[in-house]
Amino acid sequence: MAEDGPHDAPQGDAALAALAAGGSERAFRAIYRAYVRPVYWLAHGLVGNPADAEEVAQETFLVAWRKLPGFELAGDSLLPWLATICRYQSANRIRRQRRDRDHTAAPADESLPDTVDVEQQVVDAELAEAILREVAGLGELDREIFRLCATEGYAYQAAAEQLGVAHGVVRNRLSRIRTRLRTVVKEST
Image 1 (cartoon, rainbow, N blue to C red):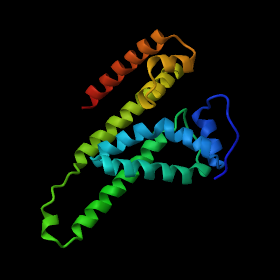
Image 2 (image 1 turned 90 degrees about the horizontal axis):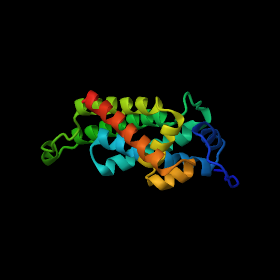
Image 3 (image 1 turned 45 degrees about the horizontal axis):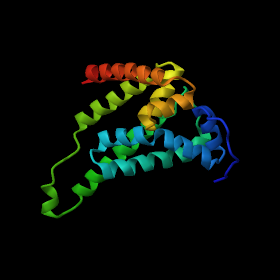
Image 4 (image 1 turned 90 degrees about the vertical axis):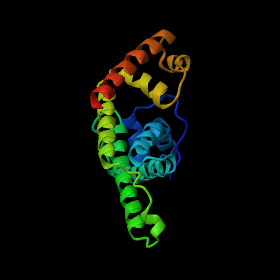
């Protein structure tokens, strides 16, 4: 992978995707940092345990890295695309685990409880898609506040400084965003 020079300004997903598609490790690392948490939590909801969720998240980004050269961003965010890859990787992992369990002759393995609830996976996937749609429908500043605070773990003041707005703006807008997302969650469950 090629390495490029320093970047002074933050870049949007489309620019980062284009740079990463061209081999920029720095751009891909920025994509990874921006989205690893939501991808992990989506994977966790689908596969049901931290170890498998971590593996699925890593597999998701490996697949994304390989597919970036032919990828064209349809919206402002890479998250819906990464969520789709994550769902496929989760389904593949669940199928492999079932196949392995089915082909194991040991009677003890037959008594293992099935920890994967397909109906719950569908609900979780639908919920994740509803949340992604809601976030995609936010204004640009609100999406950036959500990205920085909710997915990257920025404190209000750090996000405010990054975005060039007041601390209160970040706090108030994030509160409204969370209220909207809670409504989406309640309606989806």
